[in-house]
Amino acid sequence: MVISIASGKGGTGKTTIAVNLALSLNGQERVQFLDCDVEGPNAHIFLKPDFYYEKPVEIPVPAVDEARCSYCGRCAEVCSFHAIAVIKDHVLTFPELCHGCGGCIRFCPEKAITEIGRHIGVVRRGVAGEIDFVQGTLDIGEAISPPLIKAVKRLIQRDQTVILDAPPGTSCPAVETVKGSDFCLLVTEPTPFGLNDLSLATHMVRKLGVPAGVVINRSDVGDGRVDRFCEEQGIPILMRIPWDTRLSELYALGEPVAQSGSEWKAVFLRLFEDLQRVV
Ligand code: SF4
Ligand code: SF4
Image 1: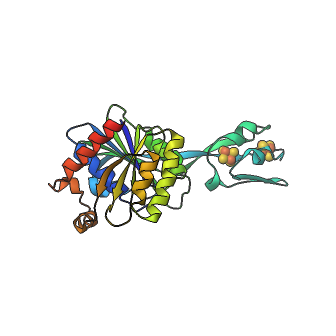
Image 2: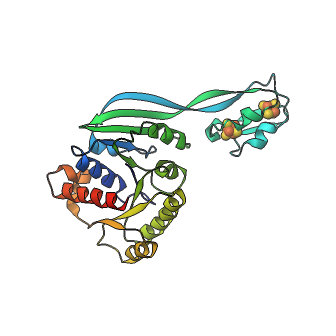
Image 3: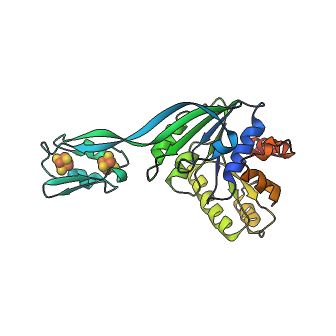
């Protein structure tokens, strides 16, 4: 089963839930953890994997041979991302805007465009205890993360329990991560911002056809509007985590609660059982 852990905004405790779920299942299930939050991966701080593999990820971008070019402008017309422009007798390319779709190459009548690779990040693989750990890290300043997330997801082992830590938000990186999951856990908090972003995230999972449930973090600090929203939308609330400074202290130390010999391991196992029932 592939479970994505997402949130409409950052700072809700998404990675905490993902890491603790993985650790709680470790030893009972074969667990694979994929850190798809490639702009700021941090699950390794808690799971402390030993990496044994690293692979660069590139996307194909156009290189124009102007000796063959007739400056017809077709390439610029087909590029939805304004990554190529034709100005009189010059073709300008903007590799940082290119999504590597290959459209300009396909439509160039003079076959004047070829592909070259542009490095956007790396995929690392390691082991954290018995957990198969995969992480994507986007290059600093790089804006195009979906191809890197795809490269991370290519390593999914569907015969294991796979946990995907999604990037925050509901834009392309989150969509790329969540799509194809068997279930999505949406982590939120009971505040107006939390509700707004949960509403956007709910819309995203519905569009993707992925069933979802909610975890309410800091469940005792806000009001009841998130509860009412979930009831109206028919989304199960699978876990509530009250505000507890001990949890924040452990987080600051990089120590997952499910490892500290506390009652939390049983709580996360219950979450997994409830989640399986919903699926
Ligand atoms: S489509 Fe090909 S020939 Fe036309 S301007 Fe672009 S590179 Fe040149
Ligand atoms: S490969 Fe696609 S995104 Fe990149 S420049 Fe060509 S048409 Fe634009």
